[in-house]
Image (cartoon, rainbow, N blue to C red; front, side):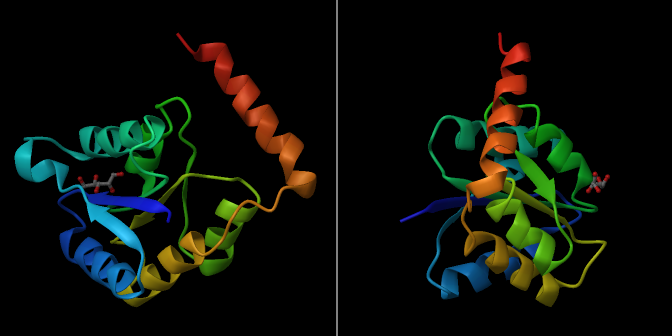
Length: 150
Ligand code: RB5
């Protein structure tokens, strides 16, 4: 079963709790990392922590929520092997998995309502990479990324 991690910054505690409970009720194997409860930090460290856990294989997919979804996406994308995208609609969330094979979804609690957030998260998690014409493009992303591997 796919293992999922979720986390958020101070702009999104209630939003994250609602999305977490919803996904748990739907039967997803999801863990709330709550990184900021034990570390005095903001979204850069919160996103980096979750992304590292995706990169090391502890989790298959991640969801990170901040005010806009943007800062956490930027930071998650700094970790090699992690591909994160911000989605505020269900179509894009589905394509994020089907076309881009992204392993992290980010959302902004100040951009959309929580009911839409639940639907977006579910759309993303229920979708898997479709391959086909997207396969060479995703391979190319992974290839180009290697240029900056240490
Ligand atoms: C608040 O810290 C806000 O800057 C943050 O949640 C996020 O929106 C950044 O991208």
